[in-house]
Length: 281
Image 1 (spheres, rainbow, N blue to C red):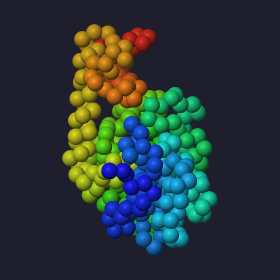
Image 2 (image 1 turned 30 degrees about the horizontal axis):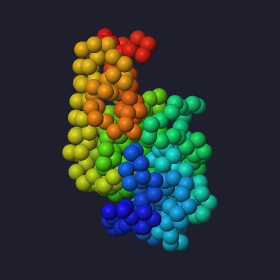
Image 3 (image 1 turned 135 degrees about the vertical axis):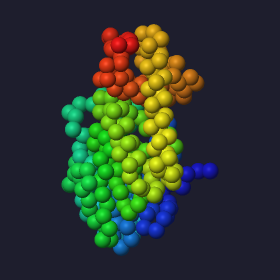
């Protein structure tokens, strides 16, 4: 069945979802933009700058006041529509900070939005109000250094930190595995009822799902460490052994995640890098 692009879906009272037409191996059916509130609104992750998606958001807003356009992070499938939507609605861009690094290496999943310029950057625990109800920033670095989730009542908009269809890509230099794991633990200690990710279906069992993600990452770390202890290996060699039968489109992303694990293991004194080869410490 085709995904319902440019059609507002009411996922629960006060929360609607619009799917952008940017499907890929990294975005699933596309980026999901959320509209929260009733009399006044916030738009979360406005997505890529696609005219039909912007038109759909504007139609869904229906002339109601937009308090803020909120971005979880600045990959190009999340934030580029923020500025043109701000021009259409008059709403400020609020949310994650611009990427702090001056230069960032190529990403497998999406490039960064270098034009992103928020009117207000939120720190951990800071909030704005919509319909008298707070939308609170929850800092979750890891996928990117500037990643935020947004809490609205007992729902959490998780961006790419937790996705409903796949594990999250963590690629250095901006992606950091230790930070990602710490952010997962931070979410595990919360009591959110439901997660609304930017890609994939809602997560209706948050604590259990986060435990699963942590377990998956720990198992992957053990696998990588075992392979390197077996013999000195390059990252492509590790990927070939750790991800048999991997979709060729995902090889670069898998290599990035392996690199993130290796850097974390190196910081903990468990592996060492010698040129392009990794060895057990």
